[in-house]
Structure formats: structure tokens, C-alpha cells
Amino acid sequence: MPQSNQLITSPPDNRCSDCLFMKIKGEPKEYGIFRRKTNQLELYLTLNFNEQWQEILGGQVKFGIKGGELRLSLENGKSPYELRHLMNGSLVVSTDKEIEIKQSSENTNSVGSSLSIDKASLTTKQEDKDKINRTEKFKKTTYCIETKGSEEKPIWVFQANADELTIKGNLIDEELATIVITENTYGVKATFEAKKKDIRLTEFEGALPSFLHPNKHKAIENMIVNYLLKNKLKPYLSRAELRHE
Image (cartoon, rainbow, N blue to C red; front, side, top):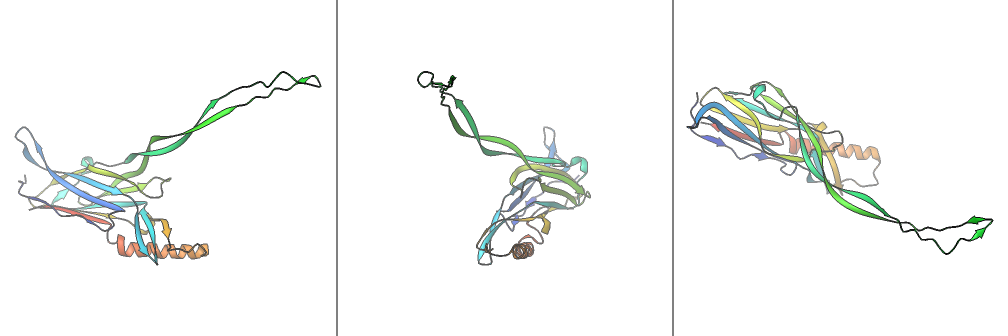
């Protein structure tokens, strides 16, 4: 059984921290009143998804990601499926939404007496209806998570729901997995990676003239996505590492 000497967590490398911030934390698992060490490491994950502005083409563009993969590379450790968390789950967040409520208060006024017109009676009524706006909180699922990969190289796949343009929301110190350690010296490397199909452009300011033909728009958007992929998202969006020496 490995003995604890020093667990070193390197500062995370978040290349687009407004779009994705990632951090991992490890805690050796203990048992009993004397807190004896085990051969297991509890791994905790912090993720924040949002959108980010990038200056380009004399303007700026806001982008986010629709999906991506969290990949672990384990040295002298394993991640059995039965000890993984965040598998086949989803993130549910609260969101504010303004709704309109109609309140009907009817004031009925009969005007004068009945007026005889061809033996018909004419009565006028006045109805007053008030509308009020109210903001309420709703729960909504923003993305789903699945796990795959080998025990030495486990993977968690994040995917936004169909009605969401990009992933937004966060996980704070969520249990990711229990790592079974096989040697005294071990390490965990984590990278969050996204592909071209995962990138979404959501807003433009000056980068895409409105008079361009739609085909030209698509060509420039494709160029921007390729630029972001090459300069911001490859080989990873975020990287974190911890080691035990």
C-alpha cells in the first residue's frame, strides 16, 4: 500500500478561462478513527462553462462550446467504471424567466336605461383587464455527461442539450472518480478537449459586415472557427495535473 509523502497539484492551464475553467483536486482516501491511508485517491473536479469574446478581423466574436471531452491520463493508477462518478448524469441549474400573468377584474357598467331600437335593448359594458409581469426561477438541464475509455485513460463526454446553443453552468468540487493507486509514485493528468464541431459562434461585433452574402458569412465563420481551433482550443482548452512523489 502506498504511503503518503507529498501530493503536488500544479496550477491549471486554462487557455480560454472565460469559456472554460477547469481545476482538479486529489485527496488520499482514509478509513477508521485513526485515519489510516488506503491505496485510493478521491479526485474532485471544478468546471465552469461560459462564453468568451475574441478580437479578430478588426472586430470581436463571442464563442462557446457545445460539447467536449475530459480526458485523464493515469500513471500507476486505474479508474474502474464502478468507482467513477458523473457518469450518465446531467447538470441541472436554476434560471430566471419572466412570465406574464393576466389578472381580470371586470367592472360592468350599464349605461342609462334601455334604449328601444326595433324592440331590441342595447347595453354597453366596460371590461378592465390588468397584466402583471413576474420573474420566477425554473430548473433546467443544461448538459449531459457520459463516461467511456479504459481504466488507465478514462474519458467523460459533455454534451449540451439540443435546445442549448452552448454549455453554460458549473460544477464545484464534484466527485469525479476514485483512483486505485498501484505504486507509491503516481500522477494524474487531465485535459479538456473540443473538436471543430463543438465550437459555436454566438455574437459578432464588427467582424462580419451585415451586407455580406450569406455564403460569404458562412465562409468567414468557418475561417474564424478554424482560427479558434488552431490558436485557442488545440491541443486542449484546459489542462491540470497532480503528482505524488
